[in-house]
Amino acid sequence: MAKKSIEILVGGFVLLGLAALLFLALKAANLAAFGNGETYVLKARFDNIGGLKPRAPVRSAGVTVGRVESITLDPQTYMGVVTLQVSQGVQFPRDSSAKILTSGLLGDQYIGIEPGADDKMLDPGATITQTQSAVVLENLIGQFLFNKAADAGGGTGEGGSAPAKP
Image 1 (tube, one colour):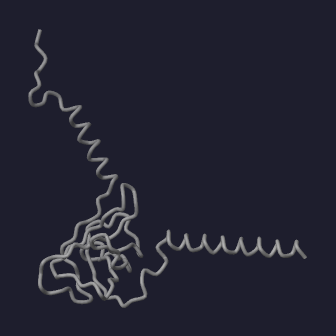
Image 2 (tube, helix red, strand yellow; image 1 turned 120 degrees about the vertical axis):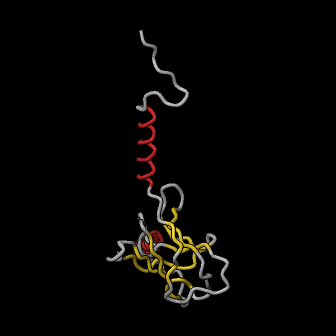
Image 3 (cartoon, rainbow, N blue to C red; image 1 turned 180 degrees about the vertical axis):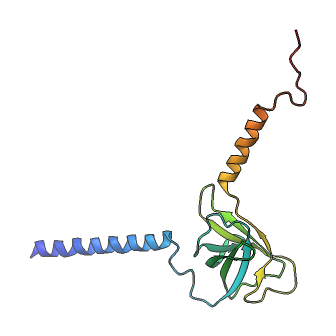
């Protein structure tokens, strides 16, 4: 009888551990609901969305106020159209701007909204017109290396002297 009760306790402990792992996996994948409240839709157009993914957070002043619902390509302008679900209790002025930012040096990307100063608020379904695309780390490294190579192979530059002729 004692052996059976120990087996039941071990089984319960294993189930509890599996439930904790499932919870952590959902949190890490941003699949847990950010809130059950009412939301409204905003859109933003970007030249480059980088590694932004659906369900990424939408933040203002570091506070999560929504999620990215979908990302599509506009076939006429070839810009990325990001559809945002924003909490109903948060309204942004019409001259607000949206940026694609990164959490930490190599972290996940998210949308950051900076409120403007306009008296009128964005209507549901409106498009945020002032946007800043993602900074792609590979492009920055490439530009840095290209500039270093150009400096090294540039010959005589400003302040340099040409070699003396014999």
